[in-house]
Length: 424
Image (cartoon, rainbow, N blue to C red; front, side, top):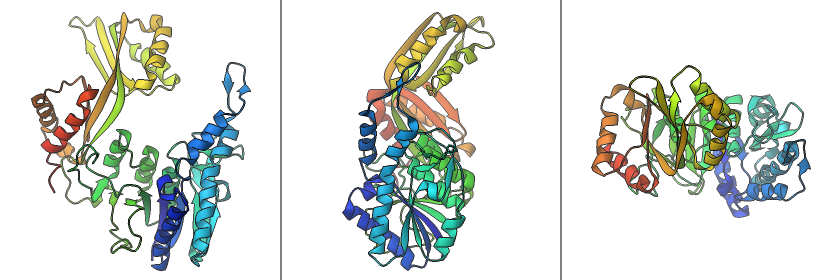
């Protein structure tokens, strides 16, 4: 017998038929004698609908600008998961399974006060553990918790994944199964590279890089939590037959296991290729090369919640001037240039330039730590295809390359092939 947390995303619970199918997946684990908790998202499209309703209501006028009361926003959008949890509990009860729904505040899942993007502080899993031990299935509304103001606080988009991993850690689950509309984590996007392979295992660090660099399988915060708390996490498909052979395998169910590096016996040099579209490059020309310049640039950008990624600095031969180039999401370019303009005197740049429509392609693999020449292989392969590189950043397990947008798919296919990821 094991203790399992199962999470089902919006497409998995999109309508009543799919909710009934989810109930069959849960029943399989219950019939095997496992203790089960289930975390659910809102039905597909429901959160967007609820957000639209909030945006259609009159705004509250503050001292500086109109805004919505974030606490009431949370009260509205959290209802999507509450509906799903109740419907799934009813479906399980119809199968003669002892089940009940739980909202975040009932457990409780304690969060900070950042309504709309709250972070989990602690979870008291004692009541859930007691009920699971008595054979009851806990059907938990994801994406929500209880803030210090005793109000519902939502965790931001993708928060149900975070809820599931956090609950798995709190109840000391043997594993956390994330059911979604794909059957695992692939070496790259199969829509671009049909030869992409599903990975049997991937290390937490690799998955964190994949998630943060464009792979949409898991939300970044959920991977961070899983890595910190060593929660073994399986990515699985909810659309496979719940009773198919192997679906109930306790140790190796179909899908991809995200686990500690020590569990992966044979590590590949490169595990996967990720990409992120809609990147933009901003360059500040002829800056004075003096202490405090970088802080003067990136401090105001951070205060304006602009996410800066790749940073490249070039210093002139005499050391008096420097150029600073960095990337931001394309949607933040105008905002970033406005912030830089407001701080021009303090920064001391000569001119600002920008270019949008770029793509960041990343090569990821823990095996890169112990192998030389990985970057050189990528650079040569791209050069052979006539793809110009605009910027490069590296870490122990990642190489990120900035290129023109139209070359994105060619670059992904080229890198996937040159590292032998096409092979079985």
